[in-house]
Image (cartoon, rainbow, N blue to C red; front, side, top):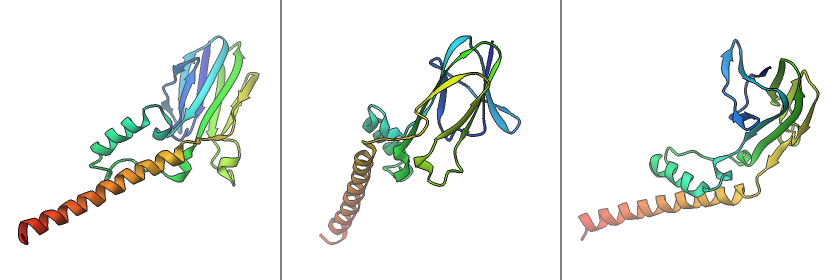
Length: 168
């Protein structure tokens, strides 16, 4: 049976159906992912910051070096500590569709539902709101500290080079 997921924008989130990543294609003004599904399904949509994953420091350090010592590397906003880990469980009996919309109209964005989901079959939702990464703040601070220390050392090295080259 055909299972279709429609969305306009997931805000960088990834979608998986029964553990298999969905690939979205343009369908007019929205994106669509079609696949075969039968019986019980689990639709998982999640988005996390680079600082939320295992081995985050190695990944960040690689991007930091490639980004010319932090000049072009990704910067992390305070709001990047919020992430989506949404799950939808249901039983598909015929061709089914799910429409997913990022809740951008919320007054207090991170206190309300993260995704607005409608489907044409009976489903149970789990983790509908935004979740907060507890380790994000300290990891973000570590990244900023390393970048600041490097630039201070670079400026001091440049000053020392100029002093030794022209004065001594």
